[in-house]
Amino acid sequence: MLADSPTTITVPTSIARRLKLYKTGGRTYAEILEEFMDAVPPKEFLAWAEQELTRPPISYTTARRRLGLPGR
Image (cartoon, rainbow, N blue to C red; front, top):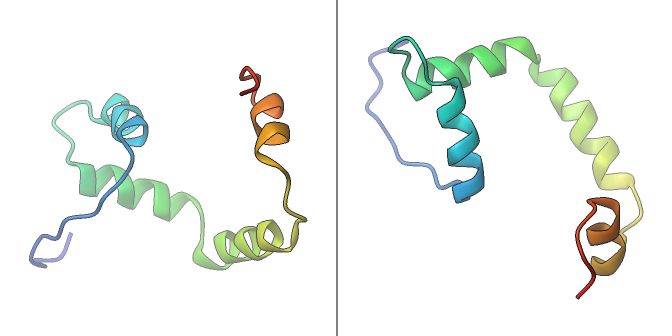
């Protein structure tokens, strides 16, 4: 990793919990994130993001049902 100055990013608590599962063997969060970013090239990620943005929106209720969550 370059000698960049550190910064803070905000992620939901659920993401932070999941990220901790990868923090083994003394690895830093920066190393883990770099590994993930190396695994998915930027062009591939951007193509996926653009495809997701073209999908029609769905209702909150539908999204909850697809995730197997109870309706509200």
